[in-house]
Length: 464
Image 1: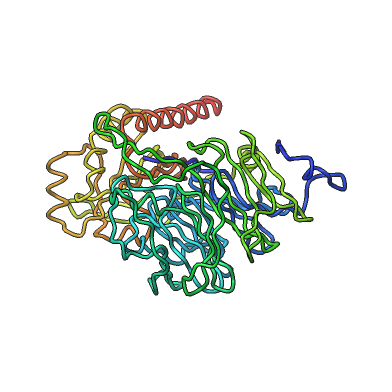
Image 2: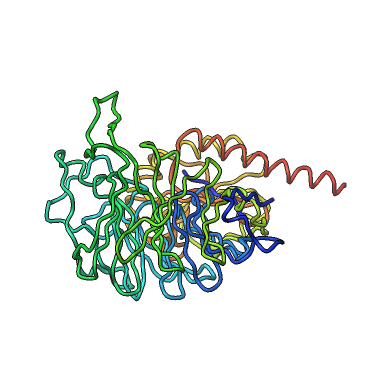
């Protein structure tokens, strides 16, 4: 379960970035935010903020001016411009296209053979690579598999380009070839593998044009499995390349690691014509956002301090408000739950994490239902018989509604289970993505407790 809340700048800049004309910093273009690339659309820099399941828009002074959140944005790992729109790479590999008002326009799953994809776009083309942010531990692929997939703007595969590097251990093909890519307006693309010291330029046909290496390690080795410890697979690998961005100055900016664990980061600036490294900046622990100033100089910031300036907006109502039949055929509406703190949970009988989640929801309901808490569980099953068998098995004491397989289209969630905690006015307190076990439900219980206590205090202050 991944939760997200309903809604003093610290500059850690090198001396070359601090020479301003006085006053507040201005004219910045954000390149990287934590470990992710940012995108520029118009005069705003858009950054993914997966810890809060949102995108944040910054103006040229790096003041946050807008956030986009909702069920379509669960764990955004990168964002790239797609014309005037935003193409978001989700942690699970889905591509999601939004307008800058946050309206979902289209989405698609990872293109085969990629288990989890990462996307970049330019010039009406999209390129997908194997994501460096979520890499399957076991991912054998054919030696003929492409390095990147070209997609059209609807997310449909058009062509596979370039060849993969096949390691001695075939099941590590996925991690060996995972890495970010970025397209330029002419169709060329740049690729940097997660675990190899290479930065490569390909032309639009997939022909290699240059390779740059930084000499980070005396000997380049492919990832290998370490001796097993328990049931967890462990891999000996060195994190080298994390993210790529083409700056407004036409240079290639590479966010990489100075150590094998990826805890100390660096930025290399490359000339795109020949791959020459023009500048290298080694980042401190709190230099977690990288930007260019108006004169094209690197400036670094603390990403948490930038994000802390995001204003906390008012809570929004759950939309659209549902009106669905229960298992007996009676229609219930969202308004029926007004006056209670309500957890709205979307589930399906075929969803294994939903089966794990239900006993926790039953316990939560019994713990708080006498204090003004309720749960409504909305099934997204198409097969009514399987849905009813699930209900008979778990016998939930709370309301179950029948969504009939139409809920994902209405609420645009990434996967199941998906839950929304509402306050007594039907406004979103938090969203929850997936099932995170006992610890996540303990945190959910604490949130429910706070929400119920807040309501009780408000009544006391109002008097009889």
